[in-house]
Image (cartoon, rainbow, N blue to C red; front, side, top):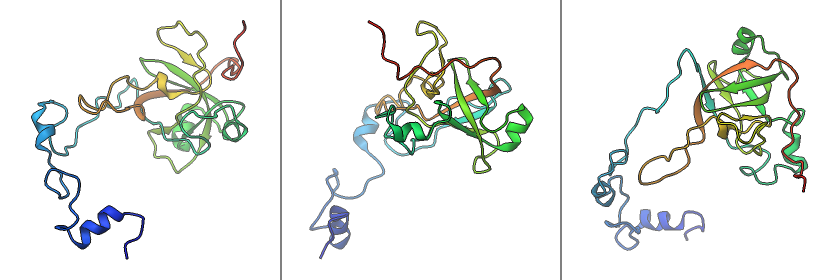
Length: 204
């Protein structure tokens, strides 16, 4: 008897002729003539590896990985106590390797600035050896909190990585989100960090 989980695939595996998959051939396909027929340069009809559009450089030597947060779903209920419990002093937490932190004069719990040509943000530093040197991790979903909403290169004081990632789709076909990876630089924030105001209702 087939279990509920994976019912379609279990049935196909048991008898492919009697339980074909909902594909043009009824089988598992890794090539699609339909997709290939669209003629998209960045999306052929079969899986390919493509180099990232950006690479680390002297100006932006770190890979930023914007992972899904453990305390919320994307940005939903970011104002809630559980989501806020994962922040430090109201800011999103950015993880980096102790060797990178030592080289940059950053201590655990320091306010740091992540930046590139598109924007910059503030976050709280968390030092951990679970991150590779040259990589920083900042969860997605902190509510956007710009110091100047009209700025061409905004500073988000709350720690939303969308100010750093590229505003482009994954391909001409999918147009999925590419907001999980970017190249950035990191430094300890100097001066008094502006307070987070993401959850303060607007006046009026």
